[in-house]
Length: 342
Image (cartoon, rainbow, N blue to C red; front, side, top):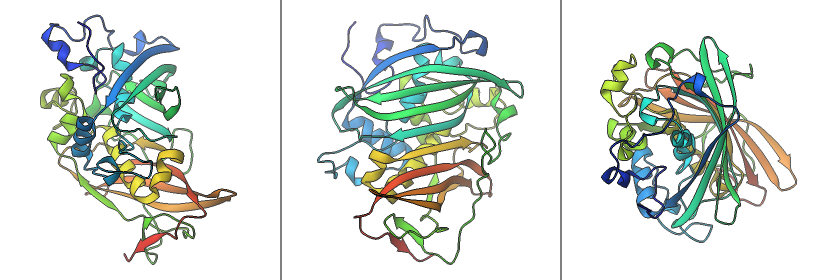
């Protein structure tokens, strides 16, 4: 049966006609990879329901996603389709047989996604390697509009077929290539930055964003509505993987970081934002966490200042779960930055 494009990566309405929604898909094992391997293209509808559902999963009720934006119409949240990007591989591999871990994510933002539009996600596995006995695969993908213009670009790293309980927590705050380690440190004498603008001082902390991802939020974010079962939305699968309770998907943590980025950088984030993070420790559902950041460097350009920041997600027990760096253009004509006392 031919259906109109759906708002999700797969169309759950297929369950009316099919007994096995994953029939014909490959087993998600490292030895089954083909490099390069084209993962296909998927067309999604960015409708009001998708925006509201995403808002629930990460508490991102940005006013531009529910009313008029500086771009002239409602737009989707920055992270709205980013999990669809990560999950693109499930067009070729059985999603419910996947027991892997997302380890690194990189995103470039070039254009906002308007409400009531269609976007196409297209991606390819471009590289695979083994490290410390684990098999890794690298995916590159892009989101484009009907005119073929790029809206978001992606590069991500995933571990295939592992036991999550044996792997989570192996990471550290140092990047895969040995780059600078990320620490939660900033000048406590400086005020928190609410809105970025000219005149940002180095060492200034961003106003923190506090969150607690519940099981309901994690389940919806991790595709329970598409009948996909995994260690993020199913207790039995989580325990089979050596976890006591489900853990929050790395991409869901990143999306909370993106909420902070849009608060701080505003419209510029949707057209010039860049972020790269690593997922280094587990975040169980129901665990309070704080999303934070600090201004590290500011590079002056003709068209403004490029602000470089460190970002992180910090569990309530003081353990970092996500760390990385971000960069965004601040227009020289923009009003001065807005701060609040610590």
